[in-house]
Image (cartoon, rainbow, N blue to C red; front, side, top):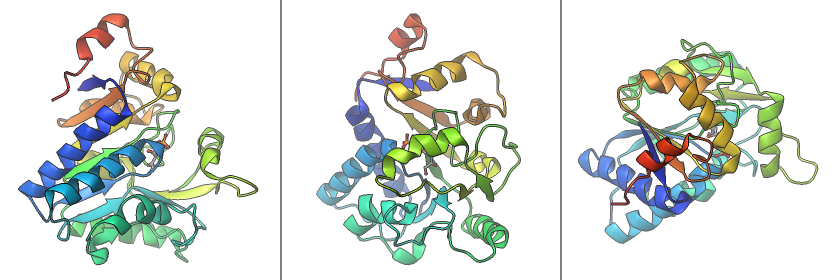
Length: 253
Ligand code: F6R
């Protein structure tokens, strides 16, 4: 389930092709979307290809994994703003089908239940895109989160807040809480593509490779998923054993 690509551009090529293929096969597909630095080249490639190939994205539905608590959708550092900037504003999506948790919901635990229900009513996720935190989190499910968890409010770990401070310049402070899809919802996706790029992910990728499935490293759960793939660039694969690196180097299509 691991595949290594030369760099993040090659991964973006590959993942954008997968997305377009799934949309062509099923125009009303339900996609699970992620934010973060890893996804930026992927969305950029996707937008270019959709335009070039005239793909109809107006019938697809999307559910984002997470949102910071306390940030309004128009706050520049919210994940809603990220999605707008990198993807939604560039293509003819139907805005009523694009879902993100609401970081300003007055009752966050009620809102989590409603988000989980909306997702269920949409039939669950067909294809889930994931990045991974340097501590192994997926969505904002931090180490130790139960694999049975559904959409919920989390306290972000210091490590995650430090990692994400690169997106919050100046005096802006990384929020302490977020609302995230749970591990159970992620695992219910029919297909999962996790992407890890850059040296900063090499350590956690090596741990994933060595360890059994454990809640201490949330994304190890993907070993139990029948259709999950992990796509790495050479930098993220850099601490895997040499023979593994050699065998898994993908031949670009
Ligand atoms: C973002 C998300 C997170 C990120 C992860 C990696 O919606 O769910 O799990 O995918 O923190 O972030 P980057 O890509 O910025 O290294």
